[in-house]
Image 1 (cartoon, rainbow, N blue to C red):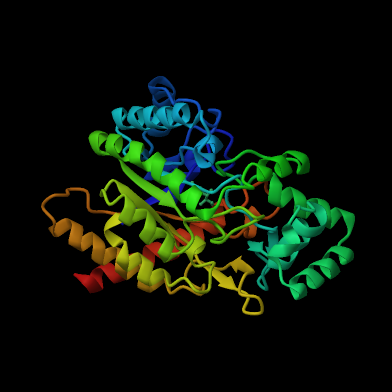
Image 2 (tube, rainbow, N blue to C red):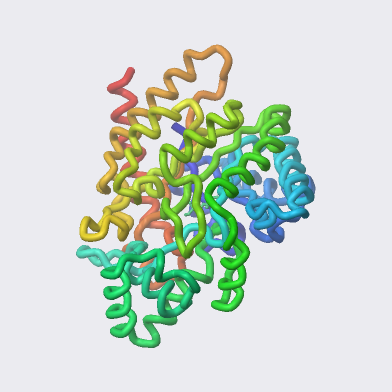
Length: 401
Ligand code: DNO
């Protein structure tokens, strides 16, 4: 398996020189400065590529191997009239990347908000800090801070009662922090950051968009993107929803095995692939991540390796655990990926058999604490994850030989 590390660009507190020391040689990055929906030109791609690929002072080399992500403009998700322009731009960006040799592209189709957490500094018993999604706090935000019209119909009476108590007991500072965690956008999020007013209007745009329609809009997008991807030799890697269920009344369509079945049976081309995000899929107690990984092994072009512990009291809240210690058995997942690599290497049609992965998220620990970090993207926490995964992969690979 190929080790990679996510880099947010020159503002990332974890520098390329730091990444070199992790041992990962592949960099996963994006042109974060380009406005959502605009074309990524060859010159902009090359500029970023030369920053990553340039070897300074005889240091070890790094390679921009994969894009995470080209954002999908809301007009495409909404199926608006102007979506054609944005689909065309997305395809041009993809083709430009392919011309520069970058041929695996992660993207997601989550409306309005990308990945979301309620607490970015959830303290674990050992003192390190994790990201956490607390369903009760999220409900309190939805019902009593955002006061979303119609929200009450989506919660049970007991959830509403609990959310009210939680809301009443929160200090103003806590409410502000919760609001900012949810609406300001987390790093790498492919949507904008909002205030309460423009979040409400962004949500209102989806009032009449059902699951079926959103699925149709994804299909319309893929029906145009996939043929160009095939022509350019690009592999698309759809990132699952995080958390994997509807939020704030928005439909989400890449949350379960059934969702993926629908997406891949409608567009079966091998170019239409998956980012196996173990933590995202594993945040839903009724997702069998190992079975999803087995079913879609041939379509996995990128793996986000992390795990979560789900709170059994509501089955909806979770915190991000150590990489090998969550509810999903990571060793089992690694075995599935290694077996798939073996299958690929025996398959004469493919010469690229190794699956690229990154240690997804990490705790804020030791020197990370007190430093400015992109939530989830600390240096030492991720390095711990990478080291554990690397050891497990090495051991399993020898066993499988
Ligand atoms: C979170 C990430 C997401 C992901 C995008 C994929 O850490 O996995 O931001 O990068 O949603 O398009």
